[in-house]
Image (cartoon, rainbow, N blue to C red; front, side, top):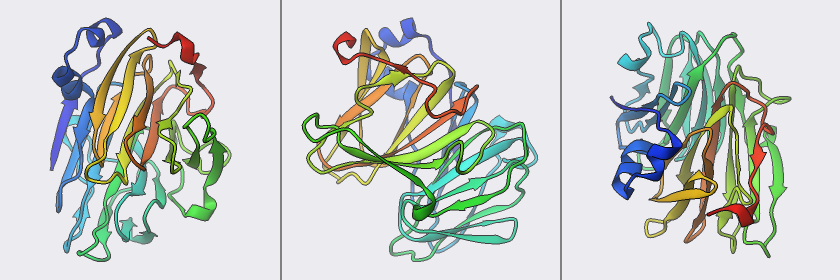
Length: 277
């Protein structure tokens, strides 16, 4: 288990950062075969993990950063499988997760184990955790149980499908909103036009990119933007004051996940495209 700590940064600090400093502050590689890797963010105390079991299962770790008996003693989690078929065993209950199926793990869940059904096509579990103040039931979220929203247009190069997994009115959480978006063939932009949300930190995990493709991810204040270039299964964190959008050189999807003061999906402040600098 390897869990890095990333500290919070102000807009003025980010505006002065080099490319390598931006990557060190906001980008993480979470997935390595047979390992658990993670990043602990001082932005809203988010802990994000990549769990990559092969022939042997992997258990949910308890990093030193959370100072808890179990990881979910005071936390909740959203889980999505971005790899081959697998299962999550939570307190003895088996939850099969195919590619892009999801699971909500409630506060107080004691034992969590991750399993790949086929070591030749291993599962890859992205686990997004945040502090929780209520106990809510563990819930499997199959594709047919997600709220699906079509957004954007081909003419604007931003046609995409949102799959809302953990969201008010569907699967409840204490303060997590969680889902994934697939950008349609021929489009490039995600989350365009962009927004900020001052009450929530958001993380993007880009996935299903070809090896040669990249996403150019834009962050920073709307009038003082910066960018980082991301490959398949890389995570980028966006502070609550920052925009978060990007464009890919080929087909891709991304998991979006927020935590903070407000879990309402529509709690955001729109940014006019013409105002971006």
